Image 1 (cartoon, one colour):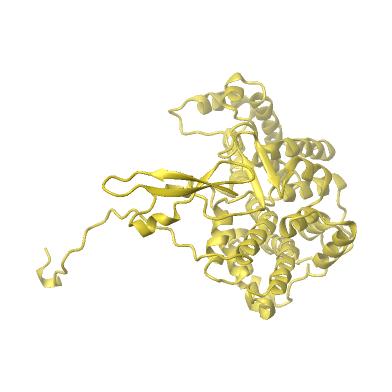
Image 2 (cartoon, rainbow, N blue to C red; image 1 turned 60 degrees about the vertical axis):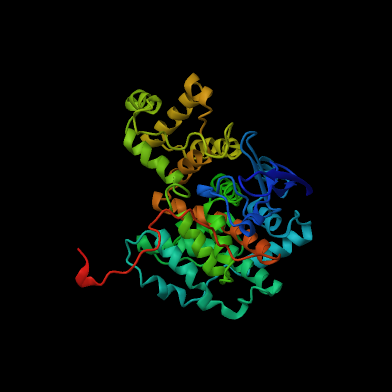
Length: 428
């Protein structure tokens, strides 16, 4: 980073020189950390103009529609790599050699089982509990089962924890689903790859050998890759904030899961399916398209456009191809999926959507794929959390590995000034 300076002029006070840092990619950053010493601080609701940390993991350029992990484009990673290779990249900074990848995959497979006592932990939840509620509780409780490596200042302990989380999240997620439908938990199989193993634990039964479609497994792996990390979003920032207190990594990841649970963050692909339910039938599309164009109408087309990507979502390009491959192979005649494809057709050709750049995003396609392969909408955010775990762990480890401060946002206080206490018998 090269350092420049900006001058802040404050009425009645001396001018203040603030360092400006130039990143590898992206906008220049003004360092305002010295303002507190001058008796003031900045006001930035939602932290939309504030960099809370320095990171080398992921870069997003919303205007260009660009997403890079350690410098590699998401299109190349999703097209040429697999999820565990991307996990290695996010954790260690470089793509693995063939030998390193083999060792990494082997290590992850050796950690896929969870402590047998965890199955009794699940029984404490109602069968109709939301899977995200179960996942929050189970992941938060992992520190009670794996407290042999919780020294966050020990690099080896952090690495073991990273392996455990990446390996066990598919098992935990599948157990959340199996518990809600009353089916027996399926043990992981180390002869399967990461995505195949997850599908085996989700849909397999002890009655017969799991039959896993290579097309579906590939699409699942791409969903994992495309959701692996997305810079300083709400859940990742939550993991970093929790980690800054020195909390154990399992607690930090549970905090990230809680943040992801919010419908404005991780529930977007679930919202797509709910929207399709609301539209109901292809014959209603024109009515709802008109509602979407009407600024006075509260209806919104979910899964179109993106808060960060102002041009196009680079993940959607990859996901669109997988979506069509899955639907073609499964040959599903589902009115909801036909409705989704009609919406896609309109969005890619309607001048209004083209002008506003309201193209289908990754959530639109991933929701359709997950629905097509039989995953209930209540599990969508659980799968998002499974995918994002490696990003959370990578950011947590990056923070712990470097000097850091406990997070302590400030506030613009607009309440009462100091006032005297009135005894209860003298209050009106």
